[in-house]
Image (cartoon, rainbow, N blue to C red; front, side, top):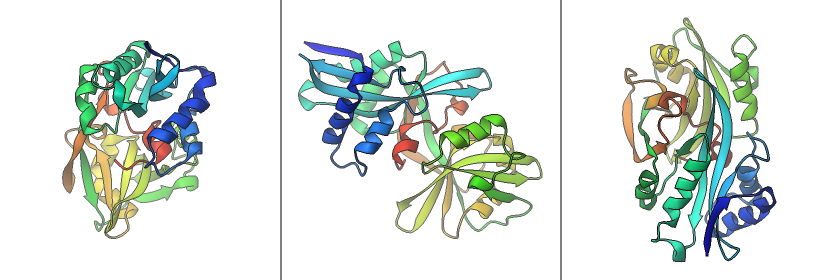
Length: 283
């Protein structure tokens, strides 16, 4: 008999071992799987995964990286889907959809999915998630810096960051996501940036979070010019900046990002507090 349930605290190590076994091509080891399941940004008693068992045997897992965020409407919780896997012999029976529906039903949170495989898209949509993002905006190096100054990482001062922004930076310490403050004539703008070699010929600097979109839009090219080494690019998801943002290039995602609509404004659902940040996944 197949049973879908919320994972218990005592199951963390078993689930981490399951993930290690079913994702053999992953470039990280057990410590990272444990971190995904650790409740880094939530309490240990909070839900961290959905399990599927058949007569007690673990046959499927859907990790949930959960966090409470400060938004314009007050505190809101996100639960990012991570490391979703169901053994092959249990597919084609709706169990995968039931796993996502269970998470959506049990969580008073915005469920997000930033790395769906092509074969899982229909399941995600049928479970009630909707497209969150379909494209990223790209700026290239080489623009005039103008009056914009960048302050990177630990050099960010108290004057640059609000209490909430300082907490964001602290929450992501030790991960490949660093705070960068752009000091402009219109005030500071915090970016949480991850730099990755997504292509052989350049590094992509992805802004997972932009604190003041209106400031970024006015000074985007100056910020890119100050941030980027020659040949590199700056990438920001469209929803984080608004429809009026003008970039050097617009690149569609092959597979959209998804979320449960109606619980948070799309512009406030950024890429922080997610498996993307913990596992340093290339989008």
